[in-house]
Length: 319
Image 1 (cartoon, rainbow, N blue to C red):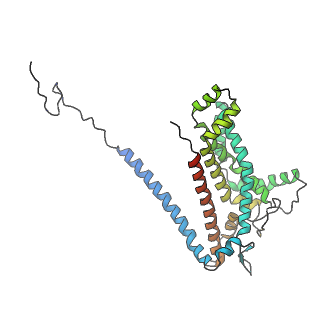
Image 2: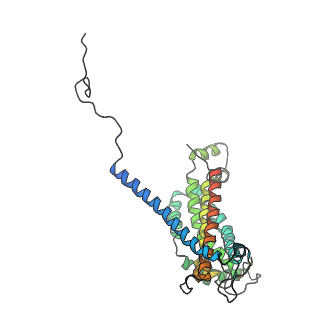
Image 3: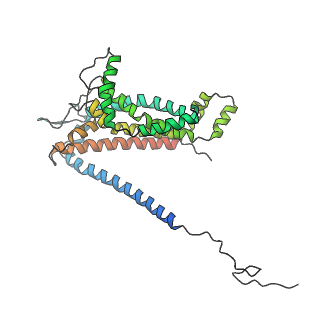
């Protein structure tokens, strides 16, 4: 019985052994990784630049106006002969728009998403889904003109018992913004519900649940983190909307009122109507634009932080 000696790097038959180690990353993957890193870094730099551009003029503003007066004052008249810098009226106007938008967008958008995810045939879904995504990109100025010339007279005709005064209305502005963000809420919520595993639905059907019970008691709770994200995106869009509220709610003197039949000014409408180049740089009125923008940024940031906590708390992970 003879013993065969195998030299290093060769098999028993004498053929060289291939290197079985995992190959290094490809050039294309390295390029993709570098591009993704660059875009992530760019987004951070852009956000930092926005914060700095808001912070520097705001510091100059608050050196003249106290933060307490700014946050609690009930009269907003920065360009008057006797100026007043109480931001509360335009904050209330902004929140009023958001409340009306939520009342419209949340039930309509969520119901649309449930239909698309659980009830709509494949052909219908393939038709409606792209339409929703196209509607998300409609110019807001066109929607604002439609609301001013069509929706406002229609709502006034349907509610003659309300004390409508003047051509502007914060309530109609909120309804319009709600209709504006319905496609966004519906599309994102539909994506979240369709990501729920099919096994959860089949298990519920096996226990005798109806389609409606499966949709409401199984799919919606399982996709709640994505649905919350859809609501947050919609609310952020509502808070930052400018042209619709500028055209429908008006840009006149802000009034501290929750009356939906009256016109008032919002934070974005003030920024849009004031930052036109007519205000001298370095004046207190000029700096007030950035102070309002900084407050709007903080409000949106606080809402997103709260939403992230809710999403983290209710997130479901499936294997």
